[in-house]
Length: 228
Image 1: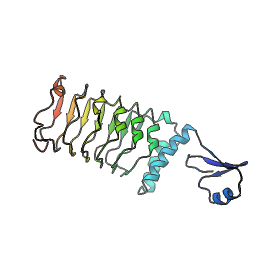
Image 2: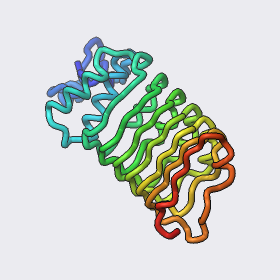
Image 3: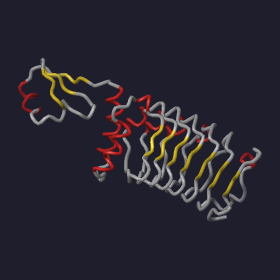
């Protein structure tokens, strides 16, 4: 039986793990084959952890063990906070979007150059930390994170933000320092703290949009932007 949570193949009355050594021999002899998926919520959670490990072969055994501890023997809905900072992750599996109850996700200090489209499925996410990665763009599905309050994107390689970024109406804190942005996003309704130092903003961008200054107590820092 496979131990990665993805399922097994049922052949007649036999079950063969997807990574069993004799799978080719058994499949060759069988007349009836069908894929049986494992729908256990614990197995689905486990599969997310294994997916992260599979996509990041540089991880050592100690790091693999720490990742597995975050997912093994847990059901999907029980995972509400996830700290994956500093693992040097280069990719995430699409299944990360199955963590629908996740409200806190820390991916700081990794090597992510892209995010899976499924990230938009994290409908309850409120805090997302993506500082110090290699992101040059965000998926369009990003704007589905309607409950997001805090977003850290500093120290990446972002050249632009998704169209309709202003749909993130719950966003209150946004850090964009040290990217390659030429323009800032359209005003966001509840944004009270914006930092965009060290971006090559267009030369004619010489003031903070009035709508960013309309909320009492707001902090906006863009004066360090290159090109001003």
